[in-house]
Length: 247
Ligand code: PEP
Image 1: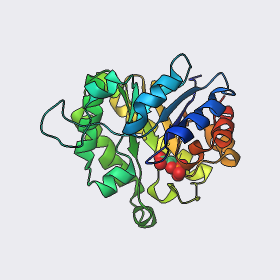
Image 2 (image 1 turned 135 degrees about the vertical axis):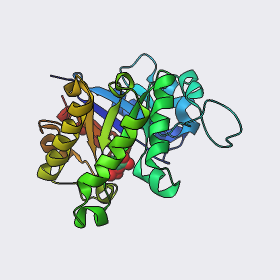
Image 3 (image 1 turned 180 degrees about the horizontal axis):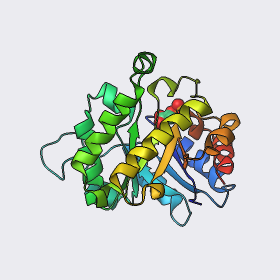
């Protein structure tokens, strides 16, 4: 069995004092038997990297440029992330797709840039509520996944992590049901099987209002390999309980 991966996405939250208090509490009780990463804002990668050094928790980032260097004000390249000790990066989060207009192709190019620089991309995919209600969930996922296959060779595709994050479940307190999640994860696994020789090796995470009370059921699903956790990762106790559910 694959070890599960639990990733905390802090979004645009935190400050030096709160980061340090949160991580002290978390690291003091972190369970074994699960891979854990935290993705602080860029501004705190250096601080969080120092706190995590020597621990088993991996440093992640929330975005990366599709370009290597140049006139891209405000962007951060994969080389810069690697300099900070980052090993994982979220790409295509629905907030970036919606608020920064990132297309499926841009997201796929960001994943390719990350891999090129030796950093594993966690590629987020997922449908909006309107898309689910109009019955086009699978078409949307297919479009997002096909963009990855169009921009990544099978060798590169084999190295990504996927995160299924229904947009309507993110930050709303309304997690998808286990039946809804497994239906999509199974669909994604079948898509992987059409493109890769070892589809079972890809980790597929679920994200969207995961709480300690719902984590067990979600992580017990046949195709769930962990979770991408937003709000609950800002509370050490909740994040610990979610990580324990993944052991
Ligand atoms: C996220 O931002 O990736 C996320 C899943 O957020 P939340 O857990 O708060 O829904």
